[in-house]
Image 1 (cartoon, rainbow, N blue to C red):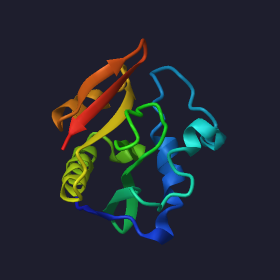
Image 2 (cartoon, rainbow, N blue to C red):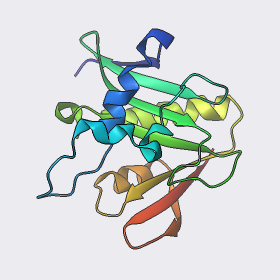
Image 3 (tube, rainbow, N blue to C red):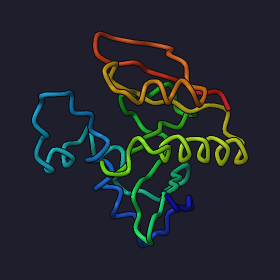
Image 4 (cartoon, one colour):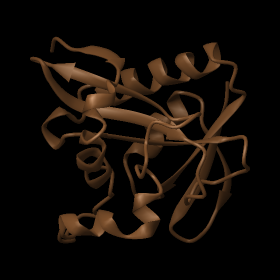
Length: 156
């Protein structure tokens, strides 16, 4: 598949709400929640007022359409480590998953942040999410866990 990875444009920030919704892990057999779920404060922390200092986003584009996004910011989210560690979110539209795009986006973002001088990033992921293996493959390690989730960190 032909795609390119690039920085998001300010005029495209609104697509982050779509990718935030796509980032919600739905276990097998569970119904997708209504799209309005992303209006809740614990989700809005990922995208509200995006574009401030320490907000970075890369997108994957195929056939001139954004099909995936990886973004980071310092926020008090599920994967929060400290006020200097960026928290990461990533998602792809369903039809673009399992094609290597997520791994490519992650690798590109890790290098991008390393080049900017960041030392580490974190994320939270449900233990049942298939993406756990991809996170490990690109350098994330579990630093905390509870019954359902891992908090993972990658040193850059």
